[in-house]
Amino acid sequence: MAAPAEISIKDLSGAWVMNKTLSDDTDPVLALQGVGWWTRKAIGLATVTLHTKQYTGDDSTTHIDISQTTENRVLNWQEREHEDHIFGHLKGRSRWLSSSDYDSEITDPFLKAEWLESIVRRGARMGRFISRVVW
Image (cartoon, rainbow, N blue to C red; front, side, top):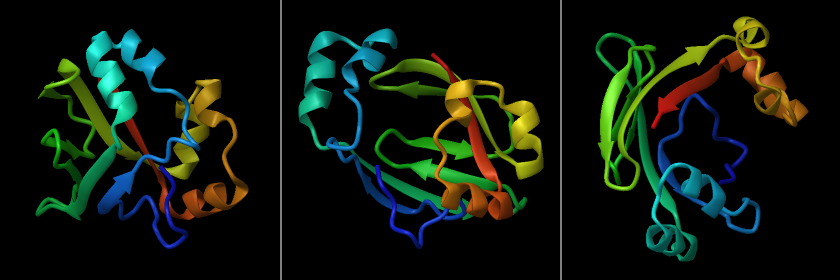
């Protein structure tokens, strides 16, 4: 999913349509997650759109709600459980990660590779979002 230049990690509210010409095939990763063949084929044919709402709660914690699956993320690094109609039962946690902590906390080479320089510069000022989900 590509974002307009004026959109940043600090406000992800909106409708996000997956651009299949810029994305890899989702079938292999869905198969690894245990999604059935028929469901994977239906997802492959569908136009994938996420409707997100990002806001700051009363406790100054960032929330990101995804309406299609009622997946509500609170960026406070507290583990939460979620039941998804495609992926089943899962646990996850999300938080902001400061630029200064990024290099020391992110060790996976894939997550560090191929950042556009303009994104890295903006990320240094804004911080980054990190999420971990266990299926």
